Image 1 (cartoon, rainbow, N blue to C red):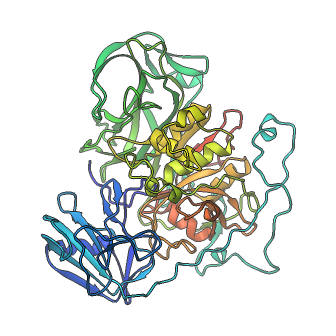
Image 2: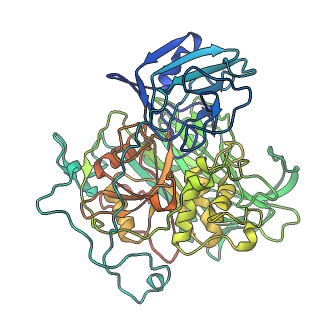
Image 3: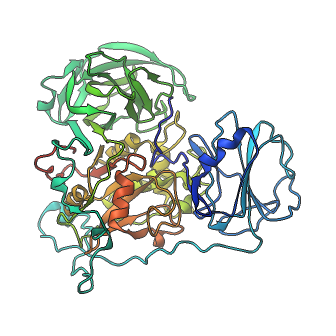
Length: 605
């Protein structure tokens, strides 16, 4: 699969934290360009979360301090295999060159004296690491750099809601009462930055502004949406697209361990759907039920500005469980029209998409008593100019409203179920998905979680990690898989892109928290004492000053999950092309309607 030129957020696949050496700021990935020779930087500081060696698609601990294993939160621990005393404490990270030569370094707030990259056969304290690249960060003995302070969470409450509707008598997740206001005369810092202006969501991404990001979402969730669709054995019935008659048979070979089986299938193609702008990325998502012995295949093809049509790209083989077939994407799909990057089709440079055709194949084994039921599917298309720098958005009605989303820390699941992306340290997406499901009063039954350690205080997180795991990608950060998972509880989900926090405020006012994808470098987001390459956070609401109230699963405890981030910084990180591009996934009950789209802009939900 072709590598993307931007840091992919939310996929837990590693990234490029900033490395500051005197007045120069670089990144571990840039430092690693010295792979073919010895390279050194002195006086470097890498302030962040923990020390990891990062391999493609997963995080792998490969850490030693003074010849001993580094335990979370301390500089001491049991002896490492083959360890000998080192002259000074060291962090040593090793990445096999057969994977890729760029090295990503994230430490636990240590003052780094020097970073030395050396092609190696073996470090002095190891037994055999032939064919690798070593990154050695020397640490002054006994010195610790304090973590970046995080503003203590404040209890922010929302406006009273009228009783009487079934929804508000159900989960009822608003705190009700007066919200704290700013001190007299206080101005939100992000809204008074020099040379920047504040605008409302209604002014963001307008279609007559060629420099603004564009986003649109097409949805198929009602019978009328299929008037122009090409149905091959499928039909809309009882609120879902269903397999009515068999269009064909196929042998499906599961690449991840299950036996090959004979399947019957039917299809639904949207037909060519024109886009209102040339798009650079397409993200399909769906809400479906797949009983055991059933699955979906989602694929698309695109048309460029000259009318050329691409081959079909498989976006997913998906099932909610993994008992009969493993859910997976298909790596290695690249060509002149673009490439599939896990869950996103990325158009080739200079060859944007003008139209697409999406096909959903509903399949069942020959002995399955019923087929899949697809309640909805969607395609989010977007285009973000690389040099666009957006102004900070203004209020849109949700300042002072915070939804009481349960707080779950992924770090409490470190080392759990390592067969699914290595454990909780890589589970920002499934942790957020489990919080969204729990917020709406749902979750797996006890009988579904018997394989999880009974001592686990939040087993639904482990359950969700398994349920969203992409067996080809080898990770839990597939956006579409996370949005699809809540369907098993009767919830709807989708992936889309928003253009501003003002747009996001509409969801908070409607009682719907939002999972956002972002990556950032150290110093780009005040209050974040780490620089994850990619993470998912849940926006729960806004302070009365417009700052963003977030559940951040990359926290040491459940109590520390609730954080407040400056509005301007959060919005810039989330919307930037390299930081996330405004990607969100959202979950809601069908009886809780989505808010209205912003008038005058292309509908993007």
